[in-house]
Length: 243
Image (cartoon, rainbow, N blue to C red; front, side, top):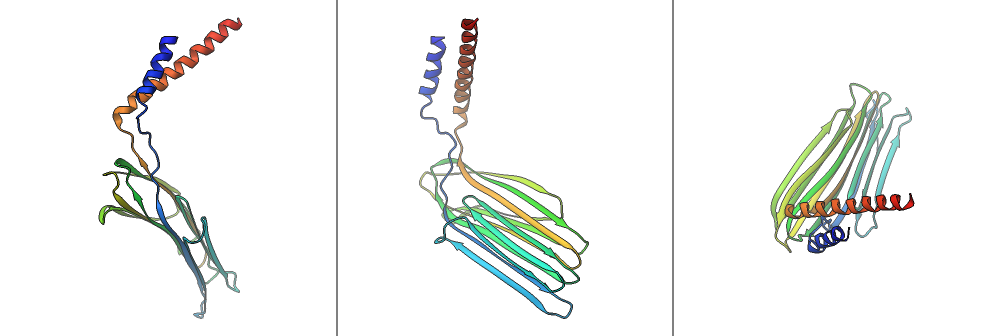
């Protein structure tokens, strides 16, 4: 048993320099904004909007606006921005009137590359409902990453329809240590309807992580396996001694 413990300590001691996946610090500003409108059959218009940014405001940011017509039509838009997450939502009811809502939120910032391989991860979810053939629901996701003005990737995705959707986007890249990178992400939601109900809530969590060197992973797995084995042997020894 002492030999096993010694080997476990040797494995972990020898791999003390192993770099675990750690998050890369993103510095930047968040934004939320949106607008709503109801157009009646005479051409009358009810509308409102909101905007908010950070800094200097403290996160989380939350913005919301809503209008209701005398006939009961309603249009609501809201957006949330917090550390590493964006949410955009719209909800409308058109009671013989055209109701529409649109909202957007985004993050724009920079980071200093720790060097080596990194990975951008986006966890996206969209929940939509359309109550009539006139219903419109749509979500837009855009993200881009650049290094000293050179774009590494810039991608747009449009999600429409009423099926719940969940996606994980993984993008690997590599930058020299000390390199200044920029990252931008934009999320929006739109809902419109004339004679029914439509709503769309979409969210995305995002982060950039370092990627450990593959050669170190077998060493870590071996060490963890041996540690688990030692613990199981200890439990057996205790069981025998109790008996």
